Image 1 (cartoon, rainbow, N blue to C red):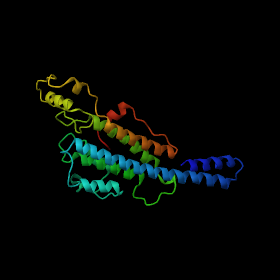
Image 2: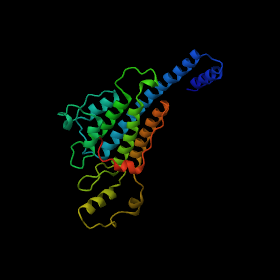
Image 3: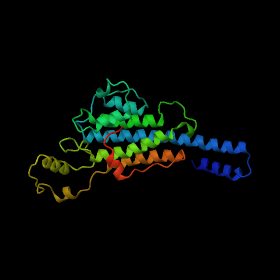
Image 4: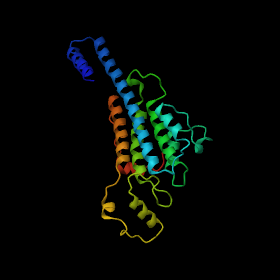
Amino acid sequence: MKFLLNVLIVIFIFNGCSTKKDNSFVHSIFQTNGATAVREQTSMLRDSLLRYKKKLDKRNPNYYSKKDAPFIINEIKYKKNHIVLELLKDKTKVTYKDYLNIAFDKNYVKNRNDYLILGIYKMLYWAYTIERKHTITTMQYDINKLQEANKMMQIIQYRVQTAKNKDGNYLFLTWQRQWQTEVLKKANQNKKISLSKYTNEQLLYHSNMNFQMISSKMIFILQETLRYLGEEGVNLSTQTIKSVLLFI
């Protein structure tokens, strides 16, 4: 990487007295180098999503299909896009938004984790055109699609942390500690709440930030991709994120 940077610096030094043809050559180098970097970022996003799935399934063991798990993992790992989950098999045209809307449905959803993970993956697959075999320059990427994925990932991160079902319980357990979920469940059932059974260590122990760290890294990578394409990633306001109830 240092060698490449040194080469580019030398090119810039001599670029002042270069011809228009030379300028085109320099520009093509940056486009090609950028495309290589974006491919690496795509790989990092898929790795991050696989780590997220592993943690999500471990924390919510009843919300994913153990039978489908290896197929979903292979789908992400080997850049495929063949799996269609049960609730969407009869729909003719399925998008990543269909998966996300099911994942965040307030009603009971069997294997909810799978809809979330595949919804995110299919979003990345669509935004980065992962099915394309060869990407030579950054000009082959669609800025609008990547900007949409950047915004959607911010909304997904918030919804995972806050979304609740019709009974008032969290759809996904991520940051919550055990005592927090127990207290919330009792509160939703109008039961008497006592914190005396919990130790001070339990009550004061900080929330689990592992999930947010992974999703924040994914947002960062998406915005880095946009920078390679000469665009700044949009950071949505909290109010805007809160206002999104459906992925449309």
